[in-house]
Image 1: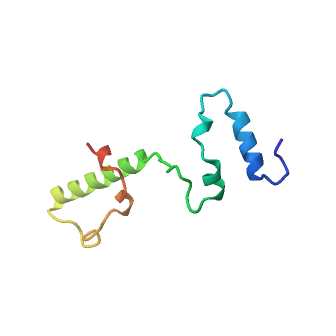
Image 2: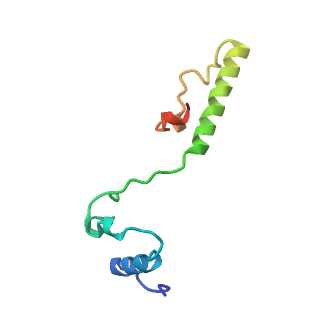
Image 3: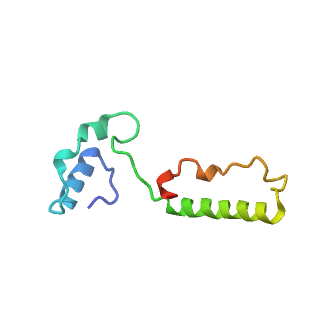
Length: 95
């Protein structure tokens, strides 16, 4: 159907409308002009699954706590460390 040809915005819209017809999608909420002609990221923000990042940060926190309890302080290589992977993780996931 769309193989070996350039996909235009009109082709994408037509395919999308056919594919999701009858699947409970409200096409009236889609602002096609904003999606195709607007600047920057799409108007609807993406929400990604961060569950693996949360687990990773929890393990790092456990490691730091264990190391502090076992040795009384962090080794020089870890002093001042900030977990860059934990920045931006939703805080409500910790409670």
